[in-house]
Image (tube, rainbow, N blue to C red; front, side, top):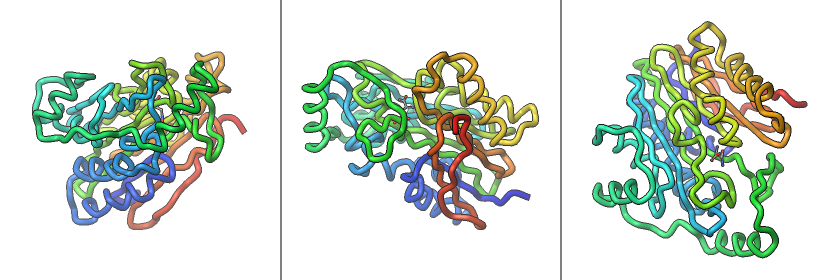
Length: 297
Ligand code: SD4
């Protein structure tokens, strides 16, 4: 029997995020509150340069954020190309709870956030502004790079989080500043329901990190959940979704993709394209990082 409650999230910034989520899960709270509280940790942390405040800007030096959230009933909310707001995941939650829509973008999303009490903040840190200036001087071409440790253009550090609470409710959230120095206006997979995140409370949830375009073209998270629906384990479902990319995308070797998945019962797993994809897990039996198996060795 898998252990509940449980929370899993992408990369090592998932460790402190899981701890925050756990405070809610351990008190028999709602997994939706847990995933929101969890991913707000890296959103507010300037050291995490691929999410929220302190995120890497786009080619024009603007920090533009993508995020979404989904609950066990299939309700979803999302924001894309949102500027000046530190916690896009919380705006996404309000889109889900307070509007008849799923997704708001750009200026409209900002207006909605401000109308709901969010503060306008400066998200581009001094440090990131300097690095962006340096990037601009050196090269103007956008070129995604796979994960190389401690490299600024670490292009895959979205936080995606999935949790099952003690009542068996499965929810997920995803938030990112997107690809480093992306084209101005570019939106990735992270706010796209079914791509960066998908939850079916009767089956399981899945979420992605890595080159968003590849995830979008294969509707990766939805695909993982469908594989689980058809009987695959979370890890196997993630592997099959990575293999779909390998089959469909000719230059897949230049990219990293990581999927995490969690079943309704609390079984979890992950798989990545390149080696080196860590994900953070917390339940009553285990707290720590696991390295996903990878397609390329
Ligand atoms: C995106 N999937 O925007 C995200 C990138 C990522 O840090 O994982 N970034 O394509």
